[in-house]
Image (cartoon, rainbow, N blue to C red; front, side):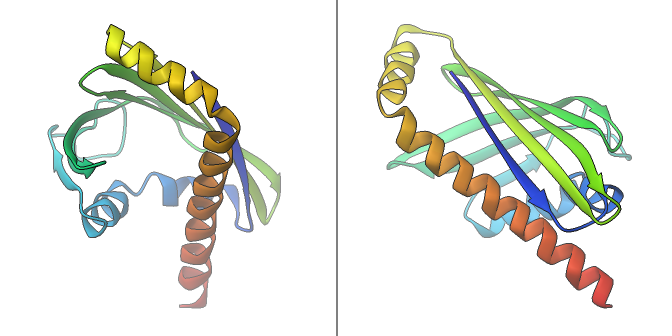
Length: 157
């Protein structure tokens, strides 16, 4: 199953990419929302090979994910591989400069089931695809708005 969304951000491409690549911020944001995030690599710079274990509660059950940054092209693209108990997912963020002060981020998520139960779950998601796409687009829009607000607050300093 594939989901796509895009968000326009009123900030230069360099600022937008730097905000999305600020892994410390995203780790803290996930922790504030109740997730337990543990970095599992020993890299000092942001780049391919960075990895995290993420634990959280969803629909009353404890979930565990492994997330790894598998590809990165500065100011162009970031690709994450997410491994769950019964699925694999790839999240690709493509960055595009629209003008000197406007950027666009395209977010594509592809989920692949690894067992029969996951296939049944993915099939049920397909039946509610339009609702799921709206929620996904809303979440990506919120994420882009957060990045835009962060860039404004940095510029205001």
